[in-house]
Image (cartoon, rainbow, N blue to C red):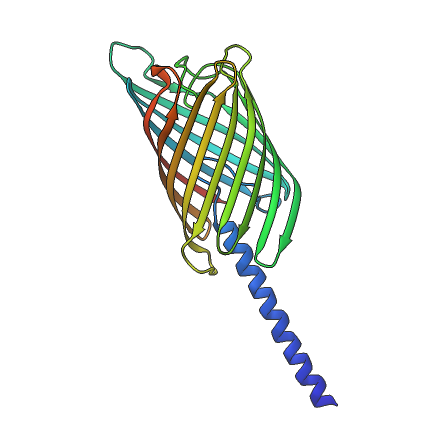
Length: 269
């Protein structure tokens, strides 16, 4: 009986250790799939985590090139809440004699709260409420998401499913701009595909296929973009790049884009 008990205990310990290792690797794999490059996802890190990141955009238009280089600091007071500040520097290179070719862009203050979570073996589904308050600290360039000099308030819902095989993220929200007719209904859809097996320490390459749709409700204009991106995560560091191209643009010529190039990094403390 003692031998049977010892063998049973050894078997149970091996099984428990195996399950713990699988859970650890799975959780790391889920976190290794960083946020979609042009949108967001509801997966959050642990309480007290700090993420310092940037996601620079170089936007080419018919009138010239606009660049936004933000420094973004995210802090998680709890495991289901996040507050952040985004401080951007902006540049423009356009034809003609124009002033103010660089300076501080519109500062964003963001907060998120995860109100739903359902986990399974190697998979999770979560939902987050999100708000962004854009302060009118930027230049009056009238280039949305680069620099407008107008106050804006965004409220949205982010829902996402992730497994060790793939990830899907959705975001639906409304951006209110009280001083102009630029109110937008926004929708984001992203698919993430990890190319490597889960490992510890984290080492992962992710492909992202992302769609962005903006409907300007007051002017009835519509924009649809597609972004193809790649992301490399190693330990606490993530590097990413993407190119975004327009599919549909029923806006004025001054707002039309040719393409955007995005370059980003983030580090988790």
